[in-house]
Image (cartoon, rainbow, N blue to C red):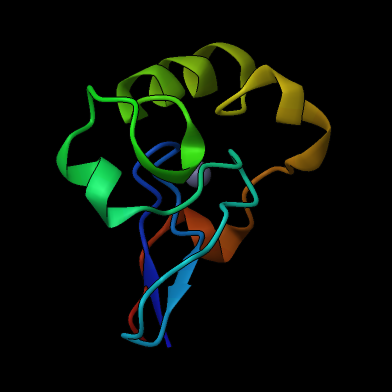
Length: 85
Ligand SMILES: [Zn+2]
């Protein structure tokens, strides 16, 4: 199991076993979506906002969309630094 960096909040919240990843970040509620990550200025995929907008929202509100504010939590220690061990 590897940890991938969430492209929105930049914490290592996404667990991957090299399968297709469908995971929602617990820290910012961004849904990991490789298609959207390649086109960060476009509103495509499951999140229904662009990655660029989601990042702005995270900086401002601590969540990718304000309506999910109650769903998120602070990052864990393990999520704050990538550790391959
Ligand atoms: Zn995140």
